[in-house]
Amino acid sequence: MTRADDDGDIALLARSEALQLRRVAAQLAANGSADPAIADIDAGVLIALGPERFVNRLFAARSHLSSDDVDRVVAFFEASSVPPSVQIANPTEATVQRLRHAGFGLDWERALCTTRPAPVSAASPFEFERVDESSLDTWLDVLARGNEITQAESRAISDDFARAAHSANDSAEWLALSGDTPVGCGSLLSVDGVAWLGGAATLPDWRGRGVQSALLAHRLDRAAAQGFELVAATAVAASGSARNLVRCGFDIVAIQHVYTRR
Image (cartoon, rainbow, N blue to C red; front, side):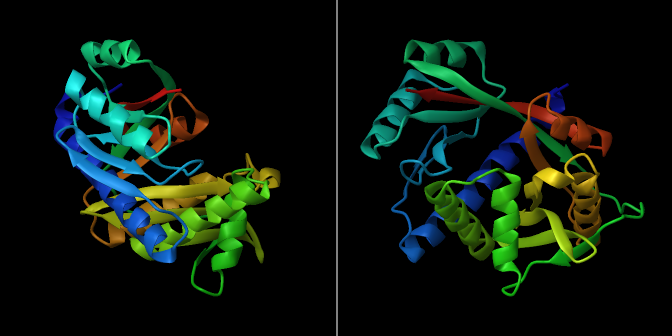
């Protein structure tokens, strides 16, 4: 269930998510691995990292778009040679109809979840190692394999994005270990006073053994210890990951819809 009194958090989270991706885009440009385009409009932030890259869409800061907003989205992304796309939380019916009239279709939905962190005292069967330069390649490998990214070109894009995110933001990444064996990973990213949980992946042979629940508890502990008042995470709507977040005390404050014109 979404809550009407979370409108302020939703706007804050939209700005925060766009800010972290601005930083990633700048890092990719500095590395020479992408030529991103970014523009601010009244409706939010337009970010295009380029064809086949992970992020090419409007991050809408409100639930309604005007016809002019949609026209600007189309023009921006066509100039960047990527399909026009919009990420918007709890869109109004008029906005949905406007996007459909312009040729956009619903691509996917995800739950936007928040919690006010408190220490988690549960014991864990796993050890946690914070990623540094010596373990960065291991983390990249676990992240890619856990997300079943196997093709060389896709793996290069994944590694570029993850390295840029690691360098550009105030982030901490952890490997979950069973003995000396890395089995999963997760990150905690600080942006504009919000602690974001992301970078979650579990190696296929270790799924269903509580790896992500343990990583979630570990990161909530770290967020509470660092004094964060708001922790945010996203998960595919109605997925096991979304249900796990709710079990751990998160509220679903919005459903983010991504519409794309093909």
